[in-house]
Length: 176
Image (tube, rainbow, N blue to C red):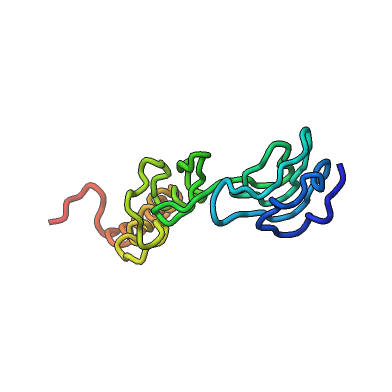
């Protein structure tokens, strides 16, 4: 299989009008075909029957791959769509949400990653961003409370403060 220099190391929104024969038995390296308009977008032409085209280290997110196209190397082929949370979620072929693109961010902020918990009404700001000081404070508390090392450090600090504040009161004796 030879490298297809014509379509490697470039960016394309569509190749639907390219003759599939130009791509057959070649590999395309380092190109971006990402579609921001919709998941499962038709971008690539059909290959001749039994044809093969490798996509090596390419971004083919939101692209439908016809028969014969193979992702290799670090090629990505995720399909995602913005939800009413104003965050992108990976979706299946029926465009049903599966999980947020940024799972770790949602978990860190204590935001559910279950599709059934998505809101029914569109938000005015992304769910992972807030300007509400009470929400920011609670998120900070949640982050600290989820980190055992931070909790231990806070407890040690409180114990040190208590030791210096009460060091004149012997343990087990009642002060009158």
